[in-house]
Length: 194
Image 1 (spheres, rainbow, N blue to C red):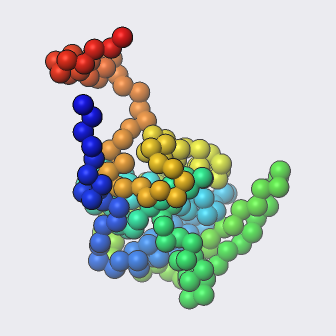
Image 2 (image 1 turned 30 degrees about the vertical axis):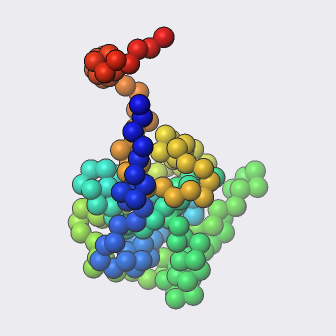
């Protein structure tokens, strides 16, 4: 018998000091740090935020921004990104520059106009952001998107919310020891494989 998951107990958003300002300032921080990256656009921005938030949640139980995420065709993204980015441009925090790469690829590069206000972030928060930036640094938007299409993303349909507990799912292959242990547990519970 499969246990049903109580959807009400999942963490779709975590209320943290600063609220939406955490997302805004994280975007400014990431854009500042990625100013010299060869490739950096909206896709990579979304994936850096997603990786930092979900890694932080998996390891310490608290994400960096706490904002809600959704599954999109090109990978996970904060639900608020579509309205937040134009507001940031209007508020003079960010601008976008278009870069053309071969094969009709146009990248909308977020460029920070101001310095990030880091008052809501701990040193750990910034470390998760920096690690996510480093992870995606050399990847193209396509590679970044493809990498984010793991088991957590595959459990959802487009526009579905992505609870933070998806961070506990792994794309790693089980080791022989893990497989043996899992089969032992299954056998002890009366589950048989054909």
